[in-house]
Amino acid sequence: MYSMVENRDFQVMLEQTIRAVVERYGTPVYIYVKDIIKHQLTRVKKVFDGVKMLPTFACKANSNPWLIQLFSKEGFGTDIVSVGEYYASELAGVPSERIVWNGNGKTKSEMEFLKDKVGFVNVDSLEEAQRWADFQSEAKFFIRVNPDVNPRTHPHISTGVRETKFGVHVDLIDKVLNTLRKQGKRVLGFHIHIGSQITEVEPFLEAISIGVELSEKYGFECINIGGGWGINYNGKELDLEEYRKKVVPLVSNFELVITELGRYLIGPAGLLVARVEYVKRTPYKTFVVLDAGMNALVRPAMYGAHHGIRVLDPKEPREECIVDVVGPLCETGDVIAKNRLVTIPRYGSLVVIENVGAYGFSMASNYNGHPKPPEVLVDFSSNEIKLIRKRGSVEDLFRNVE
Ligand SMILES: Cc1ncc(COP(=O)(O)O)c(C=O)c1O
Image (cartoon, rainbow, N blue to C red; front, side, top):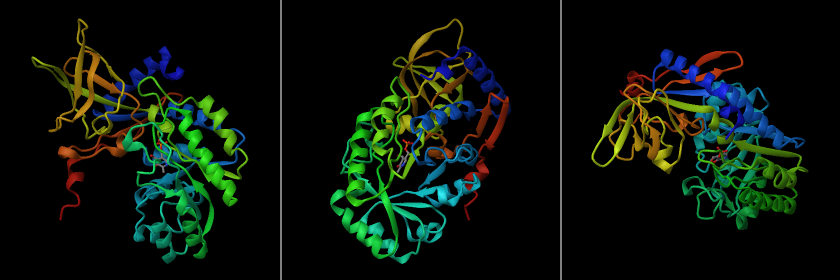
């Protein structure tokens, strides 16, 4: 794992901070550690040292403007997929020319609204290219290519094999290019994004090589290599040194390299802290029931994703047991961890769910009438605890009911 997080002093500080946050804001609560975000930022920058680039932060991973602002201040733009994510970028002060607009379902009203508000557009299909004929835009256009490369990740977050809905098949590139050029659009390069949580370098190497070959064929000097770097949820993460040595030389001569990392930048920095309501023992199984479930963190229910779980204040004398850690929702699938060995908690113990900074809050819902948790940013270097989103309320849930 990360040396910083494994450090004993860091752990003590983290635990004290978690308790202070819970005392102020209750549970469940999302906590982001600024020091870890900075650490991840530095690691990413080091990989691309010397490359002419525009790094962007993929807002879909986490669209809290206070967090986006941390990246923006370091020169990052944003990768957005909706008007909502554009607003998040605007609130964070991201300049338009650093915003990249992605998506396979861009609507006419989105095009009308965003056409002059973004620096870059990644076109996903011939049909989208044709629709752009109705809209003037000074943005720089890229064509998202489907390279038909298997990223060896979960099928739901695999985007670059030919059966997925994303990108332009290589045989259709000429048509898309001509369509956009006839409209007077400036097409600067190709975009390749093959999926998320990729922990091996090989799929990146394969896909980006295809992007580079195509760029040479079409005379493009800019390329967007997407995101997808895998973090350490359960023992394996992308080897950045190997990526630096093998992948970066492929693109180091380009005039502009755009990246769209989300998970890698924010995932390890986030914790979800929940409280134990019950330890329910049945003749078949033991359940640790939390006050947060798939409404607050859907990844385990949706992808069978693994998140580390730590029990603060376990029951004494200590007992370790294989349990299902579950939420309070009326779904059997409402699981945070299945068949996991944990130290048995007691009523009221705090449980820390790790690596939830990406696709945590951004995928949270109000299912079963639960308001969303608050979000808090902590900074160990200045001892600051800052509420960056208030807890949702039941009034929020029904605000739009006529
Ligand atoms: C087009 C595009 N770019 C970037 C990302 C960010 O990916 P990640 O958070 O894995 O870096 C995604 C998410 O899958 C995406 O669809």
